[in-house]
Image (cartoon, rainbow, N blue to C red; front, top):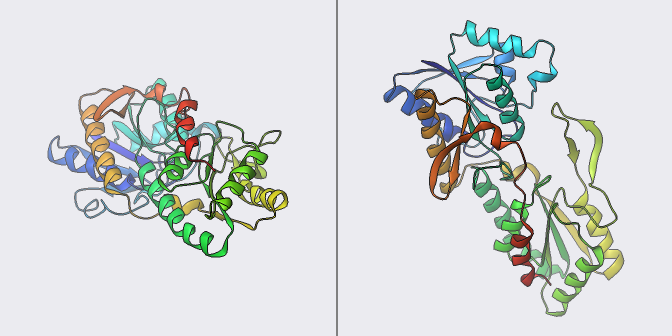
Length: 341
């Protein structure tokens, strides 16, 4: 069987580990051939490919990003996009696709499966917001990067007696903020799932200063103040209808200074969270996902996504990955509140 592999959406630590595992097991155990489609869904749209062999995938396990490249191309927004994909797959002699990506990439994969394309999905998102899998690879790396930043910021906050706000990724789900905030000893954690009170945040800030410590506030980029709206960079939408978020950390710093008289600064971690080498956890998880994905393809179990349930790698219907976002449950957030202030 000749199988196409693509990575779509934002880059993520662990993508190369999936590619490596798929190719290694696919070639050595099943005798499959592989073609890599470059730059997400742009690859099968434009017949933009690279060779995937044991040689071309050797040594990529610890590398961040993706050797295939990525993009946020949406073939359903391009005239004759689906017909072009089907034609190019046929021209390449590709029997099936393994799509590695998040909500948008797997949403396209789900639609293509319904239209007769043989597809297996692999979940990827640093936000950890894909449904029907306990964790996605990339999340652990992003949290560890954020925690290292918080640890470093504690020292400068103490030295200058100022409040420091750490803005992390998380459009609609606050998993990174929650885990990084707990692990980093944050004075408070603000997530998109629950609107926050500026006055309450200021109370926590002043409480921390009274105890002779400087506060660290961890805020997700999609967090929303009470009586406010999500902070957006501009009105432009990407191919999947998403706005660019920016500014909530800076906005909160201004509010804290005005209400407490204390100096406040913001550090926006941004793309630092998704760059660099994956953690050991993400390397192992991504590898296990890749091994299960090629096994599912070899068994003809199309329309499935590999997923982590407990410590087991299982297969679930691909459509369930995107039917709803996996957000932080209120009770999980409440666990962290004892450490606020």
